[in-house]
Image (cartoon, rainbow, N blue to C red; front, top):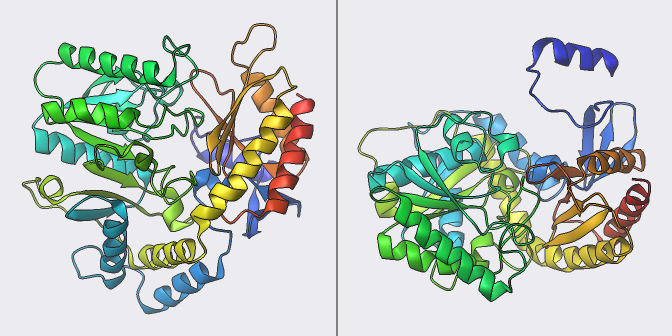
Length: 427
């Protein structure tokens, strides 16, 4: 492994992050488990950053990929593509957006980039509202609107971004308020922010649950309250569902549905889990918004026949096996188990989340300040115990991120919780 690590460092960027003091190579996976190059078996509670949504080496997906690859691997969007049309039909119907159109990309970054292009072109404005502590990707445009400074390496941007409160419930100036007061304060902040803008703002982009930001979320209904204000000004709402989509939160198929009182978003972006590891992303938008571009465009790799076949098989498996319901049931058990474990641990400030999207925020017991050192130590200890988790959060990477494949069993949830307990007690 040292040899591969040395080769990695010799040819790849210094800023390309690797987990663990001794970075590991994963060679294969099955179900909710993966194996390292040394033969060690791990229970996977991170799924390639919430991407292995159903299971590793899911037979239905691998068969679909193999069969499609045996026919044709690539054609581009310049030709009719049956798997792409079929998947677009299914996603449009599931999206909740009326008269929906779907454009496929290869990643969540590219999906959010396309959504920003659509919104700014439709509104003829380069002003964007984004949430504090947010993360939307690594392209020049999406980095420019990301509210989490740890993942925003440049302040240069083609967009003017205005940041509003609301994405983080437990910290900040409104943390002590009730949910209703919190929502009212954030709406007032939004109205005030719009008064600071020059001309018409194009869109608000928001993650229903902030992923890289540490699985934080506002009270249900906040974005519905925001939408009332946005609609007064004709401002579009982009729901970034790259991490929250496909039933991961258990209670809803899309994260925006926790904020549905005033209807669906104008634009929805997706990626990660739909491909179960294949490079699939996309944008869903009302026809008038999607069709507002006045120049030709194509996608060389978006909508590839192979990735579309994988996504179709994966989505069918997800729906037929009610993995959203499983995320609700098993995720509910897991989060309650973790809350019971952490209640007596001073290093844990909060266990939060919904479904199989759970964050454990770590702090210095004496000061309450974020504790990235403890998070790194728990990550290492969990690995030693045979469990892979993620981390993220705010100004400091002090939140453990738990997001297993949605087919997680109760026994595996208990096993993972027990391993996490040992790791947390060793921090």
